[in-house]
Length: 153
Ligand code: SF4
Image 1 (cartoon, rainbow, N blue to C red):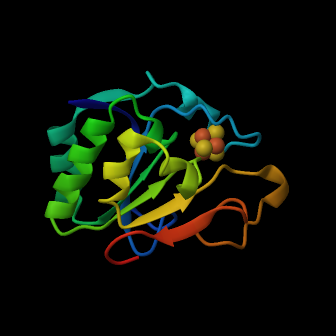
Image 2 (cartoon, helix red, strand yellow):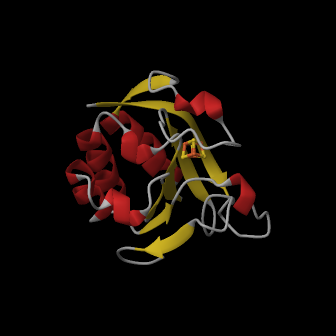
Image 3 (cartoon, protein in one colour):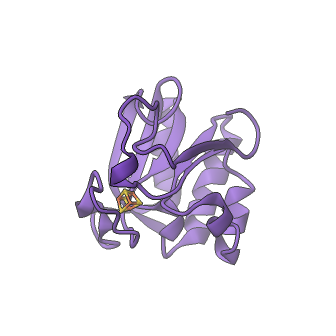
């Protein structure tokens, strides 16, 4: 099982509470005007990682983890993403996930449902330029929500 990874950033404080390891997964079709990183839209961008090797790397950092991108929920390999999340959770780390879908939209997609059952917190919704608000922690626009799904926030 593999995932295309744009970047792994250990010890960041901008993608959720505390110091976290952020994993930027390649690929997104939402095409939000004003997107922070259009280069992340290409599903073939970045480096192909074996999922267990990726899990070993991020677990070794001992930070909680944020999955972002791109849109992690649009990965062509949701089973690989689910395996990664389960490995991270088994190590006692919590998982935040950023998506351009609303939670309601994500819940309609069968392949995504098991992922929603595992992650702790979702930051949902597309970036909407007219609602851009730099005062909001961990979000780009005010339509985006920080929603606790399981476990701790
Ligand atoms: S969902 Fe995120 S990565 Fe995708 S286009 Fe919108 S802002 Fe960019």
